[in-house]
Structures are given as C-alpha cells and as structure tokens.
Image (tube, rainbow, N blue to C red; front, side):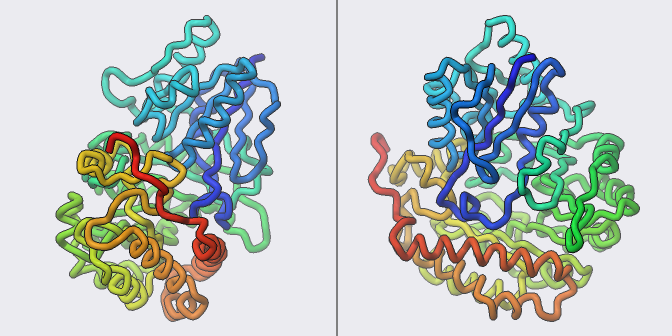
Length: 451
C-alpha cells in the first residue's frame, strides 16, 4: 500500500498563525483524502496542532497553503525532494503562481482537486506525473463527491467544530479578494440530499461544556442562492445544530431567511462590512454594502438572537488616518459580538495585486509578510507606520476586557459561544501586540525588484 502524506504548513507570526488560540480544522486536505483511492494509506499533518517529522517516510507528499504559508510550504517541499520523495502542491497560492511553486515541487494542482486528484495519482503510479493539473473545461460539478472522513482529525486538538460546504464561488469579485478568481464567478450548489447525509453522518463531540453538534458552513455566502438557502435551512431545522456561517449584509433585508437561520440553529454570521466608506465600497466593487444601513443590519440580526462577526479592512486608497477611530466607534456602538480586522493585503491573483504592482507600490514579494497583520505596499494617504499603528491600536482596544463585556452585555446572542471566542481572540491579539511592541511585526523590509 502506498503512503500519502498531506501537509498543512504553518504561518507562525500572523494573528491566525502559530499563536492563534483557536485550532480550527481545515476542510481542504480532508477533501483531498476523500478523493484518494483505497489503495493509499493517508496521513494528514497540520502544523497548527502537531509538529511535522521531516524524516518520516512517504511515497508522495501533498502540500497545501495560503500565501502567508508559502515560504514554509516551499521549505518543506525542498526538504522532501532532497530526500527523493516527489511533492505535489495545491491551494490558493500555488494555484495563482504555479511556475513559482514548480521550482519547489514536481506537480501543481490548480484550483479545485475534484476531477484532478484521482487522475494525478493514477499518473504517479504509472510514472508519468505531469507538472500541471488544471480544469480545461470549467470548474467541476459538486455532485456525487465523497464525504470527508473526520476520523483523520481525531486526537489533533482541534476545536470541536465540523466544517461543511454547501456552495462555492462568488460573483461579486471584490478587488482585494481571490475567491472569484479561484472558485468562479457564479455560485455552484451541492445537492441538498448529499449535504444532509453528510451532516447526519457527523459524529457528535464529547465534553461537558462542549457544543455537541457545532458546524461551520464554509460557503462565502450561505444565502447566495436564496431559494436554495430557504429550502436547505428548513431541512436542517430538526438536526439540532449550532451553526456558524458567512453571509452578505443584505441578509438583514430578508425576514424569512433570518427566521429560518434562527430556527435552524444559527449561532452567528460572519459579515464582510469591509469599510464604513461608500466611496471605498464602490472602488473595490462591493456595491451590495450600504454603510448608512449597517447599524440597522446589526440590530435586525441581533433581534433574531444571532451574533455577528464583522470583518473590516484598513488601508484602502480612500482611507485616511481617521479611519481607525471611525471604525472603532462604530463597532462599539453597534455592539458587534466579535470582529476581525486586517490590513489590506494584495494577494497574488487579485486585481489589487495586479494594480499595485503596475503602480510600483508593492514593497516585497516575501510572502511571509502577506498575512493581513503587516504592511506590504505603500498606502496612499498615510505612511506604512501609521497604518500599522492604527491597525494594532484598534485590535488592542476592541479586545480589552471592558470592551468585551460592554459589547456582549444585553445582547441575545449565544453567550457560551461568543464569550470564549472573544477571550480566545484576546489571547492571540495580546501575543501579537507584544510582538508589535518588540518590533517583530515590522513593515516589509525593501521594495521588490521590478515593481
């Protein structure tokens, strides 16, 4: 039996990296494992939860990764190839820069593994492995895909949550986002019967204070197809789930959907507010957001007992130095249950990366800096140091203990979920803050050659 080693490398210094309090399980490698024929023995190593033994034996190594983990991924790949072990790479970064990745690996899977991975393994066994595997006739259908085997993750110290996918793709195409480029500009839905079978097959978690049936729907917009969402939420209402998902802010305009979310066990929704500036939203192509209605959006969702994780980005060309105080004032006034703040980051494959490169504003191609917590380009209306200082100040203020209690006090959101989440983020933010104070989260060191 051949041995397949699948690896998720670590980005050690970012907010979501090595010191991140929450150990969340990734779905990508589980899907690759599910697509692997039965003649292979599969092991998954996620450096967030366990050390990687670089001397272990494998017939083939597969490495996934986002941009901030690319350097570590290449380091691991180089090591195994020096030992004579073939390496395949996939994930968002390698899919956008396959020629770069091929300097460190034998083959790259571009975009989605469905329809490609079994063919790659067959080629490997026949010693005809190709350098590039891509979908030539459009992205694959989502029907009849094998479910992930969560037993591969047992004992890995992850938080007790299952990740489940119902749709892929996004037609909005924000300038700074790579989702549309990676997963297509239209929403593709999985058959609901298959999703429900997967949900019913999940093993409940143990533990006195543990949410026994906690699910995170990884879709970029759980309500993208409203007819699909209405039927799906109605059908999962009797599964006793506590679920968290991502949605667009216009969910607040649909009372029926909000009620269905509430009845089906929705604990919280991740909303991409991005900014309070209408000019910025127009410039990045996210016209669905209307900042003048944000407070009403929050209130409407809170009225249904659903918490909100709001996402905000600092450093747009329309931002000025007042953006930090304005954003902080809003998130406190709105009593957001949790918030994720990031520095604008021009990831490869985005229109933002292309534009800033053409304008000569990129500071580095050292991908370890592309983690959303450091500055890798020249902002337009303030200095990189001002952007970095403002970002860390907002992070620190939002996760102060009085802020946590002030925001959560009196809301109807599920407290047993959001209090631990806030204090978990506070733990990670404090570590990041100390690193910033010691100069470890510096500006990118030098302009990239050729920018």
